[in-house]
Each structure stands twice: as structure tokens, then as C-alpha cells.
Length: 206
Image 1: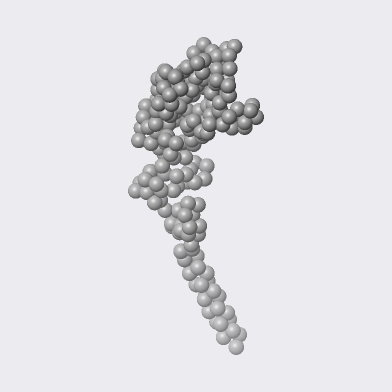
Image 2: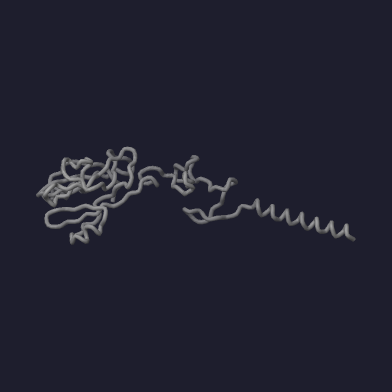
């Protein structure tokens, strides 16, 4: 009687172990950060969508800190955070700033977004610095860290020195009537009686 009971217990335990093993091997659906349900691979990682190991064609992967990164490492990728430069006008002068509240609080008229800059430098980029002509209200933007001998008020960000597939919109710097303006539209300079001083670099289209 005892032997039969022991045999029954052993069979029950083996069935339970077999059931647990089946659950452990099952493909368990989970949620990807980029799009709906997905599945882990055998190493517990999300499979890449791209054609190479690093997802350079649009796949997702882990970064060095365990976070997610988009495979696109170009001017629209995770290393390329574009931020807007806001444009204001007061009196006879334009004013461009990263902080829209700065212009609003000064009572200036908003003229929207001038263009975008990179928050951090990438290969082939140059800094854009905020400058002011000493003794005047004339602010201007320069790629010269020393602001061409005038006063430096900080840095906006970075733009590409030459055009590429994604950042191919030139930024023109214009001057006239004691005012400077950096703009994507060179024709507005001529319409205002300003002359174009040159191209400062390249950004993404607005």
C-alpha cells in the first residue's frame, strides 16, 4: 500500500516538472518600446529589424547603458537632437533665442522659429554663437566663438558645415539698418533692404 502511494506521488511530481518545463520554453509575448507586441529571442533580447547587427537600417537595439536606441545614427538619429531657435523683433532689431519666454517677457513680437540646431556636436558640425555688438541692441549669430571681436552671450548649438542628405538647408546671415538676421530665406533679406553676408552652415528643413 505504501509502495503504491509512493509511486503515485512520484508520477505526480514528474508531471508537474514536465508542465513547468513546457512553460519555460514557451515563446512569451512582450511589448517593444517602438511598436506593439513583439517577442524576445533565445538570449532574452529583442531581435533587430535592420539588416546588420547594430540596426543601422532602422532596427532597435540596446545602448551601452541598457537603454533603447534607434538604429539610425545619421542627422535624424538619437545622437542628433535638433532644437528650435526662436525669432523675435522689436523696434528695428531682430532677436534670436533658444528660450521663447525670453523674447515674450521682453515684450518683443514673435516671428516663429528661425531654424533648428543640434544640441550636441557631431562630426562635420560647427558651433553657432549668440553675440551682441557692443553698445548697441544689435544681436547677431556667428560661427566664431569670439563673436568677431564683439561680446559673446553663449552658444545656440551646432549646424553642419557642408550639406548632407538630411541637413541640406542653408542658413543665410544678413545685415542692414544696424540689424543682423540669420534666416533660411535669403529673399527676405533683399526685400527688407538687407544684404546677404554669406551662408553660415546647413540645417534640416523646417
